[in-house]
Image (cartoon, rainbow, N blue to C red; front, side):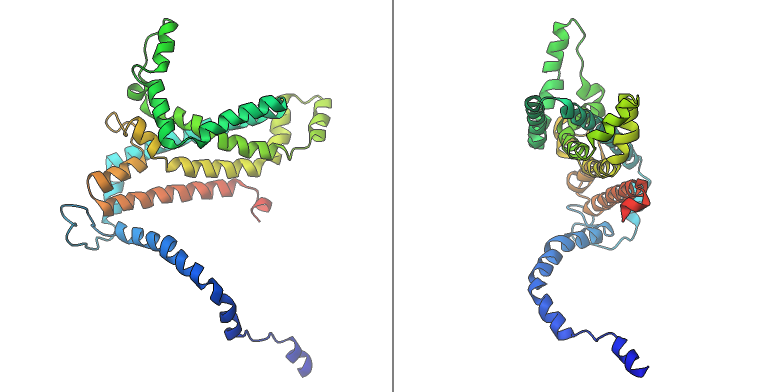
Length: 303
């Protein structure tokens, strides 16, 4: 009995051997701490201080606790930016990019190879364009003397100025145009996993196109849909350059999403502590969205 117990006892780890094996990883760990964890820790520290580029807080930095967060949560301009950020994300990512990307993927699956190749190349070109270039293209298209008004004038319709009248929708359309390619590529890969035999069997049983899509395609690619929604939501929450170049957050604050509000507070007004606190609140919104998408997945697909 005693001999059996001794044989089953776990062997003590050899600490020296473990340390020797982990030694080659030390440079990578040091680099990760310096260039990844370091800025994050410093940003969290700034959010709890009155650090400023000028004025009060520029000479000496004091710990102010949760004051930056309470100031933001009691500021109407902050909540205006939160609402605009949610509208921009829902319209351009969750609705626009998601639906347009799915439609393009479904059409390309049925199209001839040469048509699918040309269409895919055109859509991907919009995706790989630098954000600055895409913003200027849409500014020239939607501006007072842009291409849109020339087309409307040719048709005898009145001019429109979406950058002034509906700025948040104007930047949403630009973001849809630029980001739909990523969703298309994700769904194109996912649709290749849907067996044509199953689809054809449902078609023989009399199921229409909508019924086949809802009852067969969506359940099979559900995990890809949730993953894509999470990725494009996080990406859209942080869009800055596109909106900054097209509208600058205006007119007034009618298109000032949270990244632009954070930039204005941190660098235009010089309040680094307050701006960093807004950045952490934006990070919290992204984390809550990620948790919501993960909870929508069935339990067996989370493992």
